[in-house]
Image 1: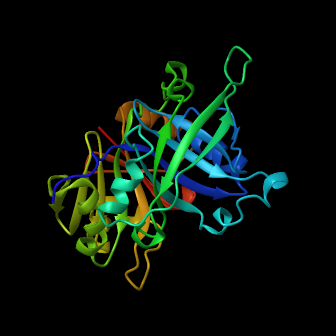
Image 2: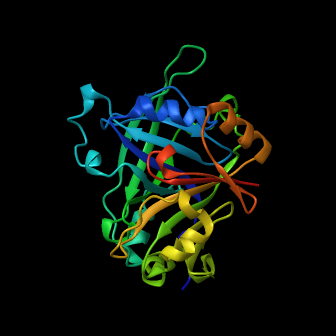
Length: 281
């Protein structure tokens, strides 16, 4: 199959529900520098850890805004969002639909961004969600940034744990071939690579690994959260590209337990709001 789009990760989303304060404190202990709390016009709130060309989003809600976006708060705590970069034109959704991949209507929203000079300009986004039937048990969507300069700012990209990018996004599935089939339609055969125990969507900087449970355990081991007994798809793990010395020092300084194995530092799901986290060079 030829490609409709070129795969590139924009950001990854960890759902933390009403525990944004606790999650932000814990991720700072993991060595991430987080942006100030942001509030979307759609009702959700977040803190971000910004890297080179992608970022991590801790997404949840504050009590006064809990009645907005109620459907989002039904999502389980843990890794729940894989977000790709789209082309800049709004018509790209038509190409997604034409390729046979179901997607919702695109919608735009804003979020004030607190800058060091005291100003708070509005960041502006357009998102297009793929249908839940092809979303790996979570949410998969495309996010266009009208104001990227309000996200990727040099003062926010310096991470104490040495992280520079998302390297791997881990998903378990009893049938990886079936799970990635819609993404062959989007990204073409060349972007889908067979790996031990599954398939990978290859992007310029990262791999989306869709693996059978045993293959996932071979990478993230006991750090993984409980896996579905029925073989259902679930987003379960992130690997970050990092300076291991900096990551090791940050974890030790934050009092976060970790295991070092196979050139990786592994942090258990019990320490991360429901997902395995690895640091690797």
